[in-house]
Image 1: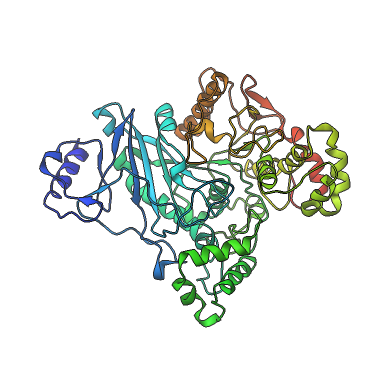
Image 2: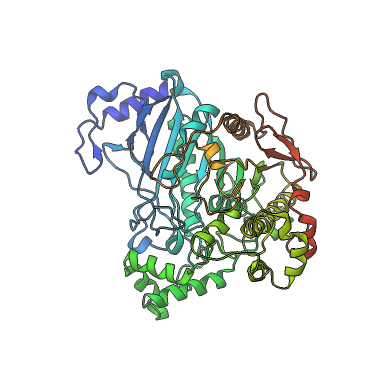
Length: 542
């Protein structure tokens, strides 16, 4: 009650302030408790109340990273006067269209955060709920928080949901010798950490518990969670639990020096080759010129922009940090989708690449080299409905150059579980709604397909909302959300009328998320990790 009275007083005092941009004066009539208005540490925000939630979108958590702040650490947002309109998502961060998704932007003023809170009545305003901070994916060069409706998880799990935008690609994950040393190549991750500090300072005003925060993400967002675990000197105290989806925390990553080579090639593309003036030159270049240069340098490779290892942002790779216990030691949920990489095979086919029985072995050579003969014996084409399906299965089980594979998930989990409780899963609904147009071969439970079960009607294309789930899939959705949100509440996943989910302490204690087959299975055996460990003993050690 005292907090509400203080909030009312602060809001009433803004009544005479002048309208500026999206900020308008607050009138005396609004001084009464209004669930759509919250006072943050930078000023008041007005969201919307609808369908059992309060939603606040597009709140600045850092200053626009422009001019001298391009390729610099994020700085706290400036204070505003009056009431900020928080009813619309902020701009996507700069990116080009990719994989048929239409996100594209040249607006660097994009560092904003969104909050969704359950709401049934005024009594909810004084409650403290667990907080889940969702980090979107997009291969470190695309994506947006606007794609993920937060209301379903908030309502069903009675949790506060948060998401944010962060710098991407050439602006967020490029290294260059001219950039400052300590965080070179890690500005997108540092944005995420700035957002976590915003949560720590502000989430109580929205009804969240700043001492019970779970960070969660999928794909590049899951990798962000990995990197925050691996930087204890920077992130300890910012979160209390972690959920990692489709990201290999123990994946070999490029060094800062490797990243610098990418940055220098981009600089060359835009004419900034003089070492003494490179940073100034790059900061003066138009956004579009840098996006075009990055696209040219990355070509068709899906992961040109990745976190680099060897600075304060990412001091050690997971393969070294986890065995030594040098990570933020909190409970973890970890897993991925059964047929992860078939999605990327689909992208290749849609782009015109031919994958047939005749060239199957040749396509395998690029990532696997002299191990192709052994792979062909382990994964004969006769076991699969098509060559693309076979290739996607091989890539999903293990691929040394991309961390989206099951054996690296299990490797990472086995390294972490020596210090923290880990709850392992595989999402395996092969009848999940599609996340890309039909490529003409069997897809199954591909990368990102579980997101539809966490964020119903997620719109991957921004053209039409996703479909309703079939009854069995809807039940699985409810069980998954119950597991994840109970974990955020207590550190232990549980769901009504569902199997108990214990810690991952042996190979056959991996939860299988599949309609009608929810329960434990042996993921190590299912994904042939014994075979892959024999091929890559320096990467798969457990």
